[in-house]
Length: 176
Image (cartoon, rainbow, N blue to C red; front, side):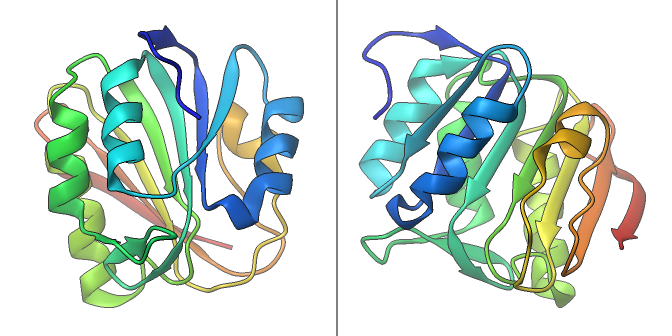
């Protein structure tokens, strides 16, 4: 659960309660200050974006499809609704933050690209950073490489876009 006051951490893992084991692994393996929080509904997501700040690395481990992810209560979260939540707290993410969406195929196709671009234009505007999103559905979660520099899944594919401080896409890569 999210803390009741503002909390600064470097790395935050937001997850469907079904992914608690992965979230626990993240907190154990991620360097510096890290936290994990289950996100059962939109109210929890709003609370999290209001209370956490200083994030350098943010993971969303939720079910999804191209261009959106779904919370456990079946609420569909678009880039626009996530952007509205995150931009209410200007200190939610830092400059050059990394945001990773691990839900099934969230970054796939034109809907996935649009989703990622909208995150770059809203959440990363004024800061720049990286947005990564799954374009296939099977990952062996190895944290070390992404927390340090780049996330390299053993299976599956990840689309990664870099955004400048104006929210414009300035680089793209698909791994592996």
